Image (tube, rainbow, N blue to C red; front, side):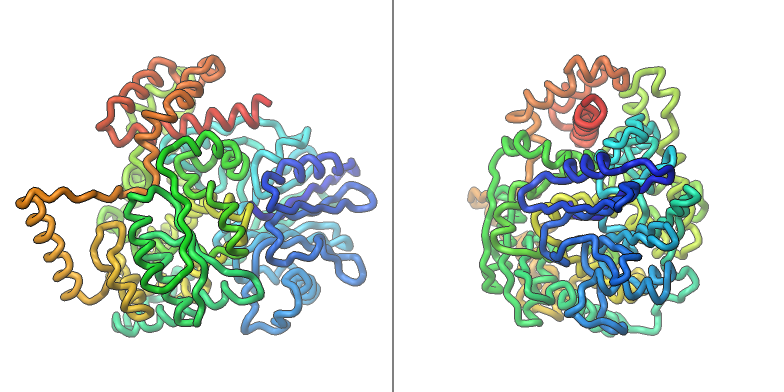
Length: 617
């Protein structure tokens, strides 16, 4: 986890103790560095936590007059802009840009970052999330005090921020296995959304949130381009994006899977003449590991495997994961956290496939969403999609009623759907498929998948080529048929590396090529081979679909740990969940055959662990 934090008081009270407590709570791994500075009056403090790779000089950074200070995490894209000298740090660039343009500078910023700037003359502080919000920034404003941090729980160090739980967040988490929009687990804390900034006027104790960037809903789709032209330009933009993320003196590496996203990055790096070290985690018998090894062999990468054959590691890593993600990310999503130490030995910057399974692949362009024409049917389709398609299958309406105690259910019923409709509302002005894709990227995916980035950034920096602004600005406005069912992704891979397009994709074990004849021939030959093996009685080892078998681990080596959470006295006395339903749900999971039990049990466990760590303590 990397990011910025700060505490500002409008009533001349010292914030030093709170800033120190926040800094202590943000430091979890030896690879992290945390630093902050308080003003002479002790009423203002700014700090940063990071992995010591990008912008490694001490922060805050002040201008020569000591009237402006900035803390910054991440990396800006500065090619093509004035004052883009790479020898000048992003922090110094921001100070000069603000001096020229003031708050209007936000619209000029591109990259993956979080920043906070303190203007001692105007006595205000500006906090900015990048266009997508890839660096979480949580904030609170109460009793004349404004504070922010990259996690929720450090803000609870302040005596003015109560740990009262947000029941809407509870309803969201149980129904969707994640939080949506700007909610946090606590009533007093909110998330700053991507493309937004906060302006806190210290003298008047006034906080304003404003949007500085959004996609243009009036811009027409690029129907003037043929599919081949679109694929050619997309491939060029992918290489440009990977080049931007890999520039500099840092060691660049990649977490290599059997999917398309990471191999497209490998192919783009090959175009640039780079062969990065690659690391793969998971079960040695999984498709991920098998096909990742083939990709590495095909491209001559230095490939390292971090294998796990059972789930005992979960008990060792659940708490670091909880601290780095606030529990917003259920424990069944901490894939690869055990590989971070080995990753740091081989790389400083991990080029991530984050968001590659988005607009480039068209995975959210589904008929069920496109068919919904009015707001209510659309909200219902998205609700069901979030619950059953886009994540682990989750609880039904009946299960929700049985899960909560009767008194609590009367309070939370309908909240998940109502809050979803509020989150959808800003996107209804966009045409399809832009409407659905922007919703999932900005409301759902960033709240879910950014937590992978959070715990990775505790050890290494992360480059995100698939959210490059030039790439997104082009791809989002291509016709949906060009991108649906990974058509464009396959075409890009075929252009960048034909050899990697001949390594099967782990999802369906088919060739990810845009050559339909070759793809069909491979599919046909695979079917014939499997049929012949069955007829001859040849035993073949089937490869596990997932790299981590959380479902069966929970029935075996993690069973005692799970029962110590679900059936503990603290869980029962909290008055949130019905003990009888928890036992019924657990028996259903132990019996197997119901795919929704893991998607229900895991959030309950994570939420209870979050309460024990951040509310009870």
